[in-house]
Every structure is written in structure tokens, then in C-alpha cells.
Length: 343
Image 1 (cartoon, rainbow, N blue to C red):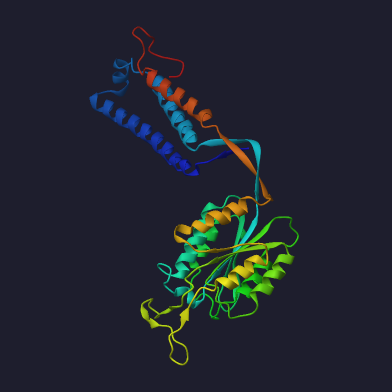
Image 2 (cartoon, rainbow, N blue to C red):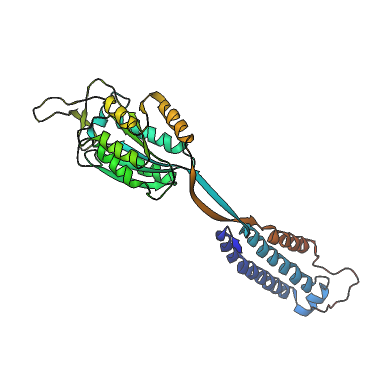
């Protein structure tokens, strides 16, 4: 199948009729100039060495040379073979805590920024694995279904932030439930869930949810973001400026601390592991090592047509036409007859 990779090159064909019009204009201008010198037929006889036929041939070769050159620039391609590309990997769902406690600044610049940085680093280092994203606070939602389009996953991740879910709280159990539903049931692929949170769960039973996930063959890794000591949570106005500290109904300053015990129990319930967030996302190396050691299966198989360049099919005739046009003389050799068969 023949195709052209550079369709915009065809706009250059507009120049072909312009070139032909230029040649016609030049011929008419030359005729008008001859008339100024005297009788037209007499002037032509005196200038009989100038061959009109050779001039037409030279200009025709020049036009065809430019036509073939435009076709070469358009990059003709021919599909000659099919390539089957297979991807192998696991299914990974990442649950990101977007509750207000993630605004705490015990991790620079704050917990949510650290979580998003870790997720971005993880996505950039994946190779062939499918990834899905769950955002959770007082409730949980699947914001990115399982995909191998890492660019799309990064765009969605950038939009995930504190406040994207109106219900406040930290519903880890609900996040596990939504993550469990994101996996394809009829699949032999390894299912892994990664939870990025400060672990302060005030909704449901996350350990029971983890045990239910284990029955589905899901392994959960947890990453705790924050410090075990309580820190206040800053509050922001609608313009994004700090507006003091978050307070409860009694006017007391709300503090938030990392609940490592809950995250350890959730991970152990599925034979996973808990990791505290460290500078530079060093814990991701251990998680990725664990994932890479898992049995991988074929995720998708795509067939691509490999197109091979065939621009030389047009480039060679273009060069031949242009070279002949420049090499062909416009005048007859001395002693040649006045008339030729083409005149």
C-alpha cells in the first residue's frame, strides 16, 4: 500500500502552473521585444541558431523535474511487512489520599505534593505495566482506569489535588474497594495496589477491606507520608493563600499524624509491605524491584504496519530531469538546418 508521509508537500504543486505561466510570459515578452527591432520573421531568421524546440524541451524537463521533486519531498512510503508488538506486565492501581490532612507540611513542601511526586516518578519508570489511579478522601473514585497510556495517566495525576473530592475524611477501606473493582476479574495477570496516604483512617475497616482484596489475589503495598508526631494542618482561602490553621468545631487546632500501624496491618493482610516515604522516593526502588520480580503476562498485542521510505522513486527521476534540462542547449550547432521537425 502506497502512502505519503508529508501531505503538506502537495501544496507546492501550486507553483507548477505558476512556473508554466512564467515561461509563457517570458516567451511573449521576448516576442514583443523582437517586434521592436523590426519585422518579426526577419529577426527570427537572423537569430535562427536559437532553437524554439530545444527551449520547449528544456522547460518541459524542468517542470517534470519539479513535479518529481515535490513527490520526493512528500515522502512516498510502502507498507512492506507487519510487526507484532507484545507487552507484558502487571496491573497496578495507585490510590492517592487527597484529604485535607495531606496539606500538612511535615514533609516538604507538603504531603500531597510528596504523594504526587512519588506517583509521577512511578509512572515514568513503568515499562509495559497497566496503571490505574484512585483518588480518595471521605469517599473514593476511579479517576483513571487501567491503561498503558502513561502520558494520559500523568495528565490525570496533575489534576488530582486536595478538594477534588468534597467529602472529607480518609476512607482507606473505600479506596481499596474501588481499586479492587478496577481490576479485570477474568484475568490471569498479577494485581497490585499501592496506597499513598498519611494513614489516618476515620471511615470503615481498612484491614477487613484488605483481607477481601487478598481473596481476589491483590497484593497491597502502602507508603506512609508524614511524621508520626502530630502537626497542624494549614488552611487556604479561595485564592490559594494561607488563611491560618484548620480548627475543629470547638475552635481547637486540628493536628494530623502518620498512622503507621494501620498501614502496616493493611499491607501485611495481603502479603504486601509497608514503606515510610523517604527523601528522593527511595522506597519506590524497593517497590519496583518487588513488582519486577512478579510473574508478568501479556497485556496487549498490537499489529503495526512498517512503512519503508520510497522517496528515491521520485528523487532519481527529478534529478535526471533537472540535469538534462540544464545540460540541453537552447541553440543549434553551427551549420545546422534552419528548421527542425518540432518547429
